[in-house]
Length: 304
Image (cartoon, rainbow, N blue to C red; front, side, top):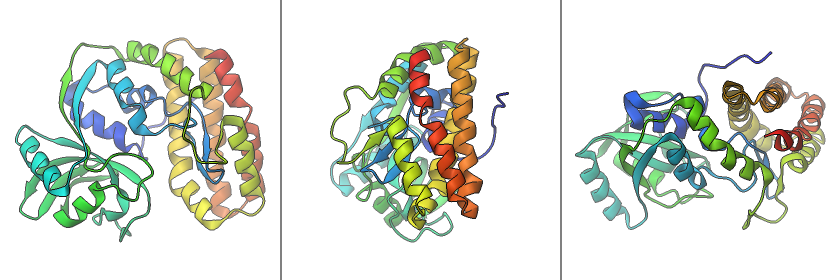
């Protein structure tokens, strides 16, 4: 039986979109579904796992996401730090500004953050006052303040594997009303394309996707999981991966894709089961779950 999940988790850009959409926002489950993030798995460079599509990163999906949801926005990126700061100040006159990706390790209002950790994040900036920035940080920190120097270091995104420094989105306009069911249906072609791994280029040598990624990760975990890999999995990848798959199952069931929903619910349970095993060091059990997970990506593509 599939049970919907409501609670905290690393859904930063889905939550940031919802804040920018305001009262017209669909559920974060539908927003996340529209990004195609639940549809696949990748092992980047043969070492770093993510429960999202092979070759995917959030920036590659945002325009498709907005189109499926009936929205547009204006994107500005790059330039010098001084130019970016002037743009941000001007944009804030009209209201909140979407900012990201940013390097989470520079967000020192979050406990334990003291420098780059190569983790991407998105925030909504509300105000600037002298040498301080006020933001809604969807990691769980509404009205967080941050010294401007730390914010600019985060916004430069120098230590991230994707994205352009000093990216903002403003001017969010709802072009048409789209029901959640219609948004889900409109997102299926992109989900199928990402799940198929078609047309992906520029991946690091040794990268694997879907079933091959799950099997290779099982080998890395079951052979004695490296502690940096364990930390990545238990603090981020498993949490967001299980939630994405579970939300996708609920979305697919809403539009009558029952078999696809069943498979994704199974994926959510398998990914979620990794958390306890990895935390307590039962790596063989985690590896077995990953080996069971692997074939489900081909099964999902066959019915989606």
